[in-house]
Length: 164
Length: 120
Image (tube, rainbow over all chains, first blue to last red; front, side):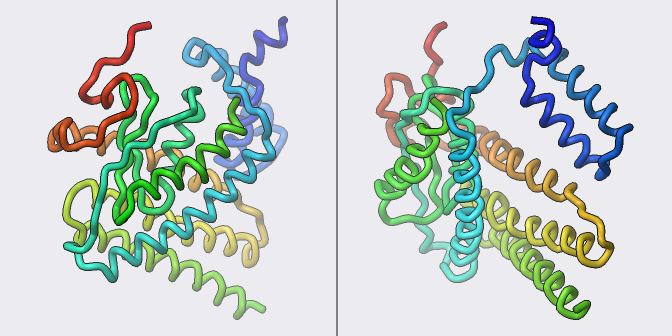
């Protein structure tokens, strides 16, 4: 009970400690104490803003997902660079695409929206008012339905397994 | 050995520089705000990424210390770029794109800029 009050979010505390190490770029006892102090105090102060704790079903799948997204970011960069360099501005066909969401948790939708923005030719622009749909802007496509299906099958289905 | 190291580091710097340049070029070449946003959110990510990989390699191979501050910069970039893009897109839609220009939502409620959220 005492421990739960001291660490309302253990993962957040650990993350803060690691970020502190990265900021000072050194791992010493002094910085461990200072980072540990920040890791304990900041989650307690900000606890009212974090009522729930996002549940992760499988951290390994999350790691695999992150690696996949990093690879897709590299591909996305090359795709967009090609469009910028070799396509005439008149030939770029942009579309708004509506992607219905099966995800319900706020964390999962946030990760999906971020993924959409960072990956091939798409930007997430807006949610519907009840968060059941996401509006995506696609830089260049001739088949908007295929883009929607790819987002659902490649990213959303994986996120559904990671966030219950 | 040093020559190869310097070559690899330079390669990452050049790749990063080229992508940053292409990203900026996209801002000039593309036609409207939404299209222009694709250039800085993506092309620039790899631009900064290339420079940061070069920086890590430099500290690791030449200075002999492992520097992971760069990972933090990449993380901050990955977290903030989509959020910034999202805000710009919403403001742009509010000012320039009518509700009728957007596709329907397939949900009970319309898009967030044009419809109220459900109560509770």
